[in-house]
Amino acid sequence: MANKHPTVRAARDRGAATIVVVMGLALGLVAMTVLLSRIAHANDLRTQAQSGADAAALGAVAEIRDRAARTVLGGQLPDGIVYLDKSAESARRYAQLNETTATSVVPSGFYGHTVKVEVRSDRCQTKYEPNQPFGRIPCRQGDRDVQRGTAVAYASVTFPTCMYTATGVECDGRTATTMDAARDLFEVRLVDKADAQPFVPGSFTSPDSAGVPTAEVAPGAGNNRRLGQQLAAQHGWTGAQWQCLDQLWQHESGWNHRALNQSSGAYGITQALPPGKMAAFGADWRTNPVPQIRWGLSYIGQRYGSPCGAWAWWQRTDPRPYPGHWY
Image (cartoon, rainbow, N blue to C red; front, side):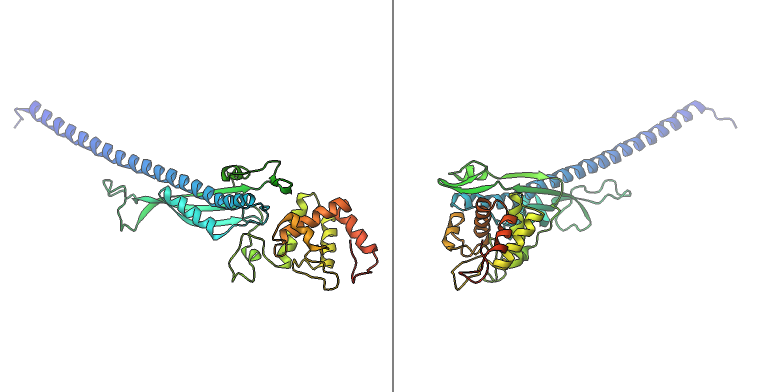
C-alpha cells in the first residue's frame, strides 16, 4: 500500500540526519579544540623549559664571575678561578625560580668557564590518548605517565687580562672599586655549544683540602704545567716558545711550585731569587702557582725577550756559584 505521507517522513529523516551531522561537527570541534589546547600547552612547557635552562646556565657562570670579581676587589689577580659545586647550586636555584628543575649541570673548558645545563619543566600534561579526547591536559600531583617540557642551554664567562699596577689590579685597562664595577669586567653570555676542552676537576684539588676543589689552582706538577701553557699562550708563547719554557722550568723545578733550593734559597716553579719578588704578582705566591708563573713570564719577557732566549742562556751558564744552571 502506498505511503500517504511521504513528504513528512522525508522531512523527519532529513532532520535526524542534520542533527547527527551537527553533533558530529560539534564533537569534532571539541576534539580539535582539545588537541590544539594540548599543542599550545606543550609549546608553553617547552618555552618555560628553555627560559629556565637559559637562566640556569647564566646563573652558573655568574657565580664564577662573582668569585672572580671579589678576588679583583681583594687586590688579587683572578687567575685560577675554577668551576665549583657552588656554580651547580646557583644553576639549580635559577632553574627553580623559573618553575623548572635542573637535571644536569656540566662544565667544560680548562677552568670550567663554560657550563651546559639541562632542565625539565615542573608543570606537565597528561599524555594524549586518541580514545580519550576529553582527558585532562595539565597533570596533577601523583600522575606518572606525563609529558614535560625539556631544554638545554650553554653559557660562558670570559675573563679579562689582569695585571698588578701601582694603584691595584687593572683588567683590560680598567680598575674597579665596587662589586658592580668588578662584575662588569667579566662577560657572561649564552653560547651555542660546550668548550672543546674538557674540564678535569681533579686537577684543581689540593692534597691538603680532602678532595674539595678550591678557587685557586691547586698543587700538582702536571696541573701547573698545563696552567703554564695556558698563561704562556696569553703572551703569544706557543709552539717552540712553549717547548723552551717547558724545558726551562722542568729543569729548574719540575713544575713544583713548592720547590726550594736549599743552597741558594731559590723557590717555586721559576726558582726566583730572592723569592719575595714574586709577591708583586700575588701575596699568596708561596702556595699558589699562578703568581709564580706570571712573575716568571714577566721576568723572561723583560730580560730575555722570549722563553727560547732564556732557555738558550740557561744552557750556556756556568753552574757556579750555585748547583745547577741559572737564568
